[in-house]
Image: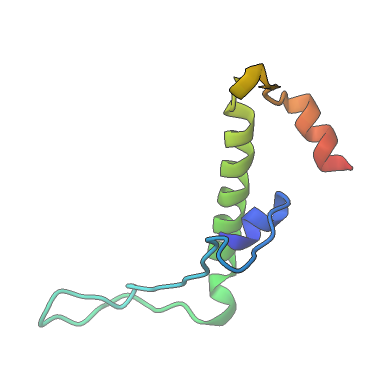
Length: 92
């Protein structure tokens, strides 16, 4: 997930909340039974990692585009972004 955030301009800092965690339950089986699944090794995980990165990036971009114009304290206005403005900002 952290790599997907990085693609959108985020940087991890101490206390920023980005956590890298990988876990697998691929070999879990009900008690008393052996798993018949074949474990993934090495580069076999690459497509799974790529999917997580792309999904994280997509979630950030979608949330940015779903944010409306906001009026804050003292009438301060922050306009929501259009897809055209976001594409321009990401291209720079």
